[in-house]
Image (spheres, rainbow, N blue to C red):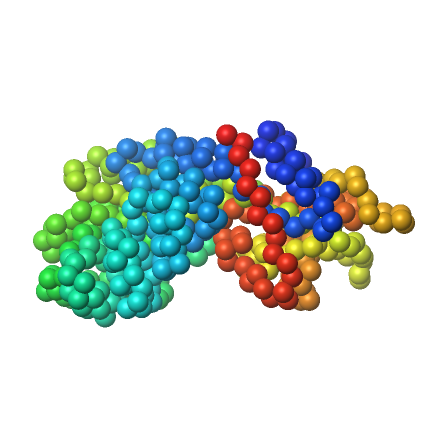
Length: 405
Ligand SMILES: *Cc1c(COP(=O)(O)O)cnc(C)c1O
């Protein structure tokens, strides 16, 4: 079936398009991210309302580190998951109350900085790292609260990216669990609080996610019992996905229902932490860029944008065609006729000098004119953050913040 350009409606779209139209009257072609704090707050409220009360909601700030996004989230989640000193600085500036620190290659400087910043939990990823954290903790005279990140034999969680249940650079292999726990116990500067089991990203299957969490909780309880650990934290990470190209999204209700029995078995005092990134912020961001040129080569139509994958890399990185809407702009800068295409399929490409700079492919448009704006929804997570901004040294997009609350 041919994909068609979207025709969004409603109050949020009105706000987004008004913000972009405001840019279109400027000197330069439009190129912008729009973040809507209202959408963000409603999404957090939806997740909160669905998750059982015992669950703690953290935000993984690598998904979107815009200061307005962070300060909005700081007020509505239990804490932030961070993985560098830069992220700690951003989290602290945004007023985050609690921090969980992860990452497979923490340097001594980072560990020291994280402890000085007062992180509440350090997710440790190897035996060598356990020793280093203990050494640094002893030097600073702090007892470091740690969770052991484990790459289990089977994680049972599907997703676009997998971090556990298979060979990856993350966590301690499950076969080394007993040795790691023995080591942690022997290091007085460490306070072992529990386990960290982040296993995948962009999983859309609610039943699979509920079984993953259930299985994780049961596994942690078993290990705590077997190894006599005073279990305080079960951190099941993030990974709830977004249906970028349409189809059924992650069914939050179904997930929460699937969790019900597990929560009942969670001993009081044991914290169940979720660290969501993508699912909290994706819908709160749009990437928009003006059509600079239209052409047909070898029988295929191209719209070429003032922007591209150096701002919004996700579709190119994952090899899919990202949906978009056309925002018609009536103003026209030139003293000659305005080129347009009508009722054709277009590929939407960016301004970079590489044929890989493509955001959408073979999408039917009723009409597209040079000077119109192409708007990509669901761009609030891993959009700007993961892109190679300075490749070709074009100006960065504007970052507009609106609030539909
Ligand atoms: C990236 C990451 C997350 C968030 O993942 P999402 O797929 O965006 O929910 C959570 N925890 C850790 C350790 C991560 O690296």
